[in-house]
Image 1: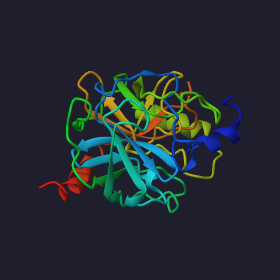
Image 2: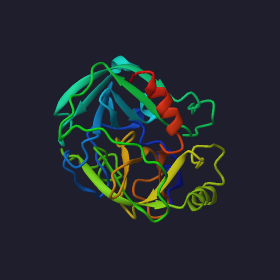
Image 3: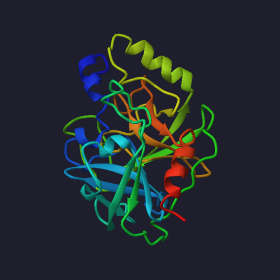
Length: 266
């Protein structure tokens, strides 16, 4: 299937909230994940589409900037505290701050700096099924295990099946240079930065497992210490054996996150 280059080109941005079919789509080839094991995972309903998010403070959610393209705070509902899709508790968003250097239109399709901060209208009561997560102090070395979760598609197909429960899968951190070369080599003919791997990205390999449509904005978490490494950003083909999945590296962007969040947490 990966030889169908046109299909893959179209698939580059398919993690994006604005380019997905119905919102109830799940992680490819994953397992059911109890929300108590990943209590920082939230679900974002954005107009008629969806993304994941990460509860960083009781009033702050981190997500992918591309999830917010064409949307504003009033368009977002945040569901938390349940493994079931669009159940649990719900709260609203009062402000959206997208990274100032994220602009796919001006940057020829690049997903660089694909991160946004959502300020909640009111703090979430923290419980065993709704907890915050700390940012990692450093990006794990290549070969380290990590966990990614979400309510994204379980089969890389427009007509894929849609289970009701949060899914997760374990993936391996990919060497950054190898990841960059994989895309440079395979996509050298493309006249766009859509598949450019930049310094503020971290790559993983799931070997036929990984995030898919609807998982954007969700967490990549270190194992076993459970710190936030990345935010689900993009891939050319869900769970592809040759192309790594790419996340926004929150370690590289940690100063921006801390500076932005400090405006709303005193």
